[in-house]
Image 1 (cartoon, rainbow, N blue to C red):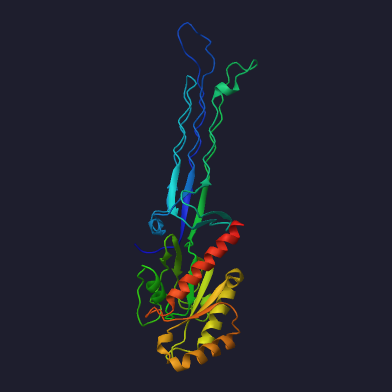
Image 2 (spheres, helix red, strand yellow; image 1 turned 90 degrees about the vertical axis):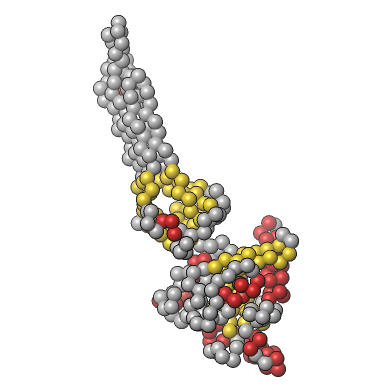
Length: 340
């Protein structure tokens, strides 16, 4: 199934049923009085999160969701049936905006979480409601209220603990293949990854976390160069960013690449740029052992880097075990701080 992370749909709630004008007609009861019943309420539209779904692809073509209308009221004080509600199933992590006003309507982050997005119309009133001591035979009713109709923009933001960030061919897909069961495409040309990939990293019994790999960034991504920044939204829910840098002799300047990525990150979202970020210098297996220490010191000094850093080889798994253990420890510490 094609990965789709943004769609626009229309939701239409049901209309309330009209009230009824009716009078009791029975033998030997010449003045039975009004007995027109109320209409039924219109059905509402809900969005419901489901972790079995991981893309919005189902809504590329099916874009209209309409709840049932309420039935009209009937004689003998019979109320019309209410319209049926409908549930639109979306992936966990879906953010809902009003497409016309850009208002944030909701954010579905838990399985089975349900959000009302279009309320059904209220039922109309039958003429029985209007009888009184001064009006014994009312001949009017109240119409049902129309249901809400809205255009919604759905954005999927994957839920992961760790996000991978870097230039194309920095080794992000290779790293997620090395530490998890995910099998994204890996090749020796840029933009091999064109959609986000998720992998579950297991560190031990009941100790695991989710890692997200998104397409690489290039200079001027904020203006749409390369694949642009459309997939950076998937890193907004992560707790830690791993900034991968290719330090092999065949790469371009790793310092320049790292600074460029950080610049594009700030242009996209200052909040994302301030998220905890670890530097991962990849492809160390291609650097002679005698030169590794000097190269790493030079990169750290040029970047003015004082946070966590690692030097590893994703393809040979050298240094990956230390990385995932440190990540697990840090995530557990963050969870403990949150609980307190």
